[in-house]
Amino acid sequence: MPIDFPCSVCGQMLRVGDDASGRQARCPNCQSVMTVPGGGATPAAPEPAAWNPFAESPVGADASNPYAAPQPA
Image (tube, rainbow, N blue to C red; front, side, top):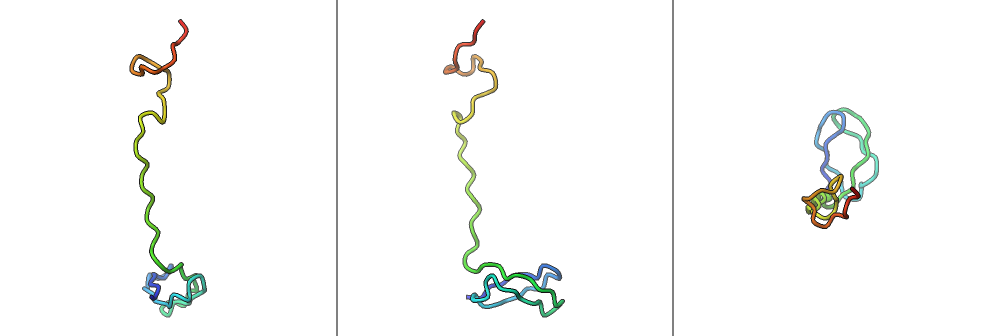
């Protein structure tokens, strides 16, 4: 499966074989040399962490936190 990527200088779309991954390629439009990106699937963006109300405690315990340690008077 070929690797399609834009030239980093002029934006021309380039197509190379998947065996060229990590190698140098010259843009036929502007003659600039760049590294061919890795082939295969694009890595997925990481999933956002689920909100955990118990992960962080509020600064200064108050009555809204029934599990807070008692504060000295």
